[in-house]
Length: 170
Image (cartoon, rainbow, N blue to C red; front, side, top):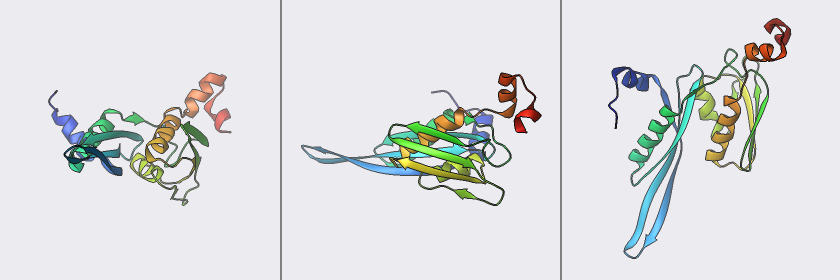
């Protein structure tokens, strides 16, 4: 395994870790029950970068550590408009559908379940979100991430349409 550099350790200290879910699973064997744990963690810098990871281990602490390491490796930059989303979005993963709307200043984070910690670590302050269908935390986060990763900036939309940014923002 590669050694961590000083900048990686410093970067890990500035990131906000949130444990979304911890699950205990049981494997029944001849000698008794074997317990193992799985954890889902979201990591963000509060400034538009977010990632999530899942970890499994025989102990909770190890599972959470594995999940946060994976989350740090899977971080992506999300283009935000101030402290909210660029536009209305819907995402789907499995039987889960998420609807996310940008909120007016003062709205706060109106989201439930596993969506709230993602918005908190992302740095979004005003948003309205709804989960339709399965409320499995893993599927909710995957649907959100899929949706957020595909978000376009006004610059990209303007370039695709051969217009200026002012015309797009109208």
